[in-house]
Image (cartoon, rainbow, N blue to C red; front, side):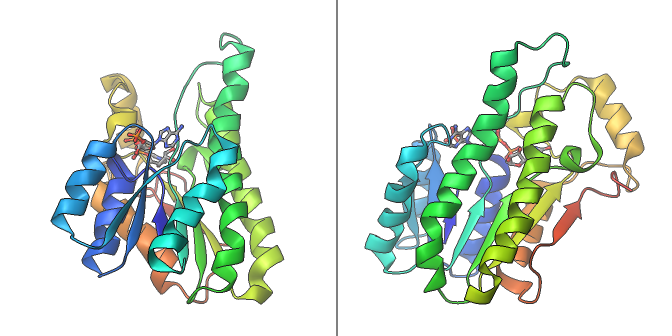
Length: 236
Ligand SMILES: NC(=O)c1ccc[n+]([C@@H]2O[C@H](COP(=O)([O-])OP(=O)(O)OC[C@H]3O[C@@H](n4cnc5c(N)ncnc54)[C@H](OP(=O)(O)O)[C@@H]3O)[C@@H](O)[C@H]2O)c1
């Protein structure tokens, strides 16, 4: 397995869920090597730290190769790493606007591309992309981030059509609001609006989102091209 953005937040939760199931997990990180080191110490022999920067498309093949060199196979990729940057269309610097799209889309496409040959030989192979509820319903101040997250859905469905006959499933998880470093700066006023719009009246937890991701990756063996909302009902 390879999980990107496994050093913090949702990705760390996904890695822990897979490790608890006894999987061997390549844990992607960019700056959080220390956190991956702790995960490895807690799960001896199950964790491979994989430094992978979404902004460096050329690094994707090496990330995949490091998993193959260590465990000889790759069965699943969970493309979770991402970066949020908000700003209204009229005020956000156009270069930054495109950077948000590029970072969230290009790096994931590169990793999927690099992983496909190995996945074709994998056991019940799958790709999961972590999108967002805002890619489905939009959100003010998120034209760039929401565009990237919506594009991931079109990407996943197209890829699912390309590789279904190779036995590879490609699915999308669209989480709602979860308290992580990414959302730490969201002001109380916006939190209240989001919470009010969420049918369950609360935010999701990392563990809840992680279980949904692992469900898509490991258990949902007849699902491909699907988008699973894990948003407490925010998007309906
Ligand atoms: N939190 C939410 O409410 C929410 C809602 C919907 C969707 N999501 C999506 O869920 C995913 C995880 O979000 P999160 O809340 O867990 O975020 P987070 O706490 O900010 O963690 C982000 C993770 O992505 C990695 N990362 C960031 N930039 C990277 C880059 N350029 N290259 C490689 N890795 C990079 C970080 O690695 P390092 O720490 O090693 O730098 C970290 O492990 C994201 O795709 C996000 O868009 C989150």
